[in-house]
Length: 342
Image (tube, rainbow, N blue to C red; front, side):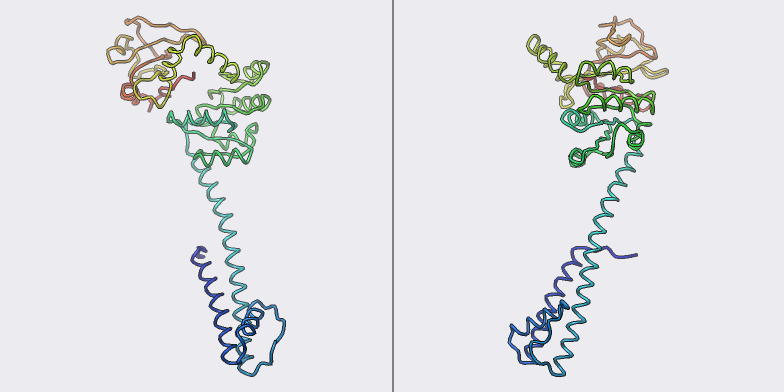
């Protein structure tokens, strides 16, 4: 097994070069009686195999020293080239090893989220998902975005997110969801189409920059469509009209807030909540804010006697510790709680 070149090898080579120059300069000075300048010139031209010729006549001993200097110089040159080549190869292999390790980590992931596009919106989405404890794989084709994502510590698949090969490499078949946040709507449509083809159960959220793109994204298979500009307008209006309500919701949805949380949870067949009532949850410190009947349809504030059954989608509020204690065992068998998007 070949030894890996390290900084110690490079330093040893530099020491050998300096030692050779000093040694042969001293030999030419002592044996031939030359000045230090002439001896140094002869040493350097001989070690580097430049071969300008003898600046003075050499006797038998001087020729032996010159031949020895030429041999040492040749060895140093080949050794230096070898070390530099090894350093370059090591750097290349290091990059390949890093990419291979990253791909192995991606291949081991399940129920993660794929974020396509690591711009201002995508980077914020990735940070929120990671803060919620979800695995995140960033997909981007721009080298600057890829490097920023790697520096931020995300698993990255560099490539075109509109192609099936890139999405497969990002583990889309095992993913829980995908978020398309590319700046161009047409690319987001293609990403959604490809993703839906590869994983029919995938939960897809897509960014729409123009109103006309929303219908196309919906037809392509997006479960939720978000317009940053429309959302910003709604947000500003809510803050102007109901600032306290907006602040409360922000606190409940913020992963940095430690006192309480709003969570989404689906009741599973045979699970711990199957057959229980809203009153049972309230007795354990969990408030059932609503039962989701369909997109945009809710049974708000269900009565305590309301019995829960498999398939019910619940919106719950409780302290974070209560949510974690009561619902974490269920996550091992189901999707588990998910933080609602604002």
